[in-house]
Length: 194
Length: 194
Image (cartoon, rainbow over all chains, first blue to last red):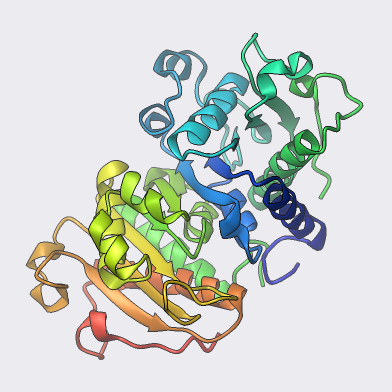
């Protein structure tokens, strides 16, 4: 553990993001649920983050996902907050509300209890960006955006930290034009070995 | 260091807050600048935080303090973002925008560079709550709210962590009706010994 609270490789993901976005002259906004501020904290641990980081919204109460981030209220009622389309709309919403080029989002169940009928470790992370509409391979339900479904192991702290790593990696991959070997990111399943 | 990323005594402050607010049936919202998500992350590290924690806004870009949290734009232009009245308005604003009983806020300079003419380590933390209007001893400029001015030592990470501890302690003291021995909280100067 470093003084920033995450292992060194995770710190480097945030460092790489800040460096990459700075070079591109682009900005980032973050919407969080289960990570509860950790994604934003990780990005702002990097000196110079203010060049690229606009800000974040932690929408912990479900209705704030609707009221602040603009997630569809019927969707939230029907599927609950732990849902890939909710993650996508959170990323879209925070990008719009905070006026950033890129939006990233996390929603899921950190535990110790299940939530909305989903087991602990069910996590969705999403990226919304200026050109994702053209990325048909990553499209979810025909809408723009990129969502990864995760099934993580570990305790509350480990699930949250692995979610941070996953959403930063999702954006890093998107920025560097890489794709995982697992086909559609939507279908990716990972185990958080920590 | 614990797996939550802060020393044990800081974890306990968040634990105590969640326990205390749960018992009172009250909710909390967080507005962050230099801490960049760390305050929210610290609170949500506590299992059961969802009972009391509504959410947070990290308004890293100065104009988001105005556009999202409702901080006075003229104030921001005239004094910059690192200012006790800005901290107070951030706490008021997030309490209102996220619909919570209590709002807490941080603004300051984590470094490595000075900001808005303020040296590294200049930090203001604020609390806004349902009954602070009657606390004349803590009033700032006649308005409701409680603001503490800090002058912290250390590197970027240490200044951020000490700011987290300070704002959690400010709310804890307020909830438990305690006052520091330093008179008006507004005038309190602390050194972050870490």
